[in-house]
Length: 145
Image (cartoon, rainbow, N blue to C red; front, top):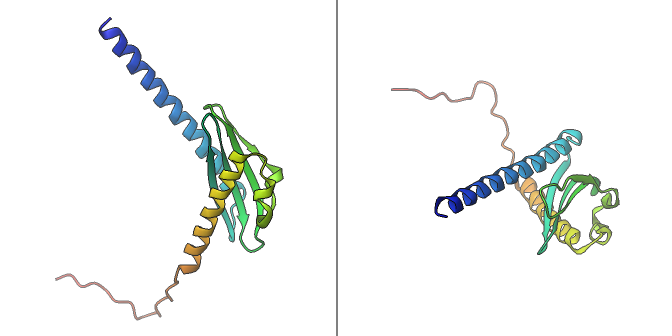
């Protein structure tokens, strides 16, 4: 039983890697679908995860920044690679009451993480300084010597 154990272990690692990549691709596909469906100025997509010992929750929220409202919400619940993104209509509404609308502690943790990401994103956007465009005819050219 020398090489058989190594072959079984190697096969299990490859299968685990492929299933993990498949799970990540499904998550990326669901995020991209939300981006395409709810794309617009003043809308932000934030995500958060609430991990537990055996299972967890990932929350994806589309926030209308001007209205301070969640306009779309989706959750991934479970502990396996077969967890799929499902709409969460109970999370739609004002951001101020969002943690109270969470169904369980894993969802509450995920919402807290998403709200932290929202605050950081808002701070980054407000700190962004726009440089005024240069007037026509004043652009400098690089001269090669």
